[in-house]
Image (tube, rainbow, N blue to C red; front, side, top):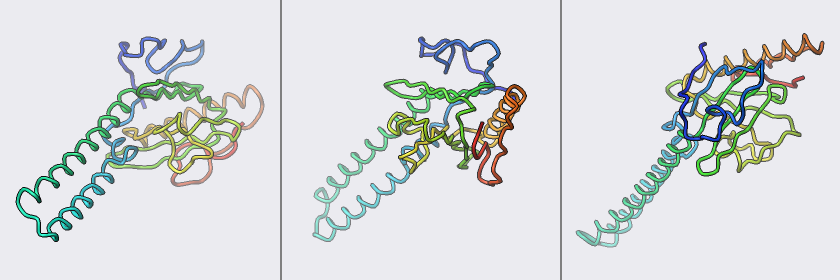
Length: 228
């Protein structure tokens, strides 16, 4: 799979290169860069679809209640229009947040680490060396998108709030940094495993320590189990 390139111009002028806080050292190269699909991010991270269904049900309940009280005409229509307007505004704000989250996020694979640049207002960059990634799993979505969650060792902790929404759901005590809603996710997760494997094969040659094998898990597209 060919590495995806990005434009040399970028909004984060403090970066040495797009998605990277400093210049890559000798021997380290970019393998892949990509961003979340913001539409899928709106659905799966910001839950716009579920919230829209909730609002629709609440407006339906409100309409039934007002109709049951004998209200008709303007007395019936105005409260429903107000409720629909407020619901639409809330959904628009959530969708806008998803758009900003997708636009501001950039995931990078090098031959030595995964770099996650995330954050809408406060930009954070996380460097995750392959040797500190204990495992990974992939979750499929529509249109070939995937969430790729990276399991860290217990001593390597990143705050849940610092990662949101780039974290695996329901993993609060030990948050897992997650590449959210990646287009062509299967190819990307396979590339991640390939690079991880090559990195550990190189370490094996240098240190003489065998790299672990991935677990036999049909839902996993990246390394599983203890790592050297």
